[in-house]
Image (cartoon, rainbow, N blue to C red; front, side, top):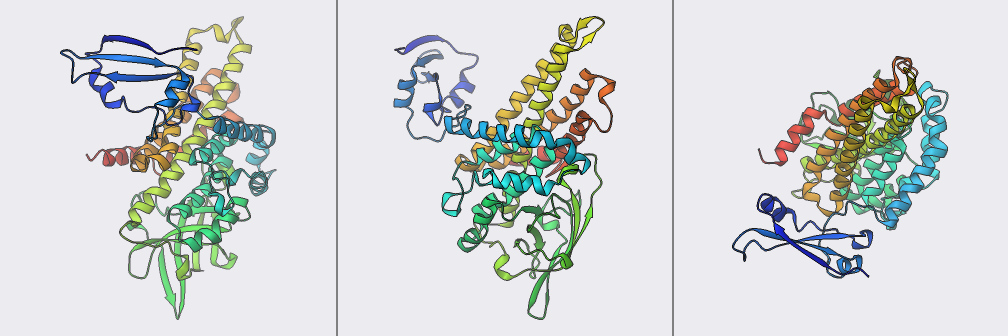
Amino acid sequence: MLQSVLIDFDFRLLFEPVKEHAPALYKRPEQVAWHLNLALAYESLSEPRASIMIKSRTEAQNDMGTGRYMNTFLSDEDLSFQRECSQFAKEFLAPLAKSLETGKAASKDVLKKIAESGLLAASVPKQYGGKGGPFLHAALLTEALGTYEAGVAAMVASHLSVSEFINEYGSDSQKSQFLPMLARGETLATVAYLEDERQVLPAEVLCREKQDGGALYLQGTKRFVLNAEAAGMLVVLAQNLTGNSQFWLIDKVAAAQVKFEAETSIGLNTARPAQITLNKLAAEEKSKIALDENRSIEQQFDFILSVVRTLLASACIGMVEGELASAAEFARTALRHGEPLANSQAVQWKLADHATEGSAARLLTYRAAWSKGEQPQTFVQNASMCKFYASKVARTYSGETIQILGISHTGADTNFARLYGDAKMIELLAGSSEEQKALISRELKL
């Protein structure tokens, strides 16, 4: 059995940043084969030095404690769920990707199949019919789906965001009523908050609660609502009778009260983005998400969009992984000027950049998913970081993949042209990259 080995060395140049981050040990030691514990002795030594203690797995477990620290590795449970999601996506979704894009297969039927698999229940608490997994499992699901079909991943992201939102801010009765059926996929849900691409604050919403006699209803228009026609439940942002913005949970969407108009876009066509017009959409008082000093509309707005952003980022890292696999396989088998394309240093460097930035995007996204439950004070910033970076990487390397494959793969009906459009749409959804930078700056107290 490996014993501890202590190495003492000069750490002058890197001391301060390491001192700051040294406590960030792994939360779940059973996942870690090796553990580096930076034991710094700055205060007691005449010159800054550091000791790196390389410990065995057992030793790391014994002195880990119960602090909330992120592990950059997935646990056995996480890996098992990841394999389940990947297998489902490969066996069921991959063969349907092109048919979904052309409309030969219905997105609604695909979502029904996903619901039947039980995957939508991954992060719903057990007392409400879910599997009780961490939010990271929701991210792993959208990542697996995004590898083959980003539009389906975006629809699932919207549905899962509603579940997370209700679990965080819903009343006990709202949780009991809605979470079980969302976990089972009996009702598909989506978020309707955006009215104008310039809208960045909940106070800017124009949709209104109105009253006709004793009946309350919502009146207004929402744009780029994913999977709107198939959804049986909407989370709608609107101004209440007192002029304050508030969220409503609408679970009975009557056809006469909602008009759908497809949004024309360059990507995510399988997610069927639509503009919806609410015409006296019935909204009961009990449908409102409560507001108080601990549950402000700003907090709720930041939360639900941060969930959406994290799950969209997960879809992006799935896209990046799929693009990399395709580009690498093409480079290994294609010939240019009689030589394998993989022998070209230019191609090697493109693929190296692709792999490196994809891995960085994955770590940012996993950190954001982890921080939702374990370090919530950093969740908004982490979600904006991963959404900004992962969507940029997906868009950049969908283009670089086409660059490697060549002009014969640029047709509008090709998988790679679709990926580029999907990536660009995700880069704009739930706040553009510029808005994410503004949010990150806000969280930095600038």
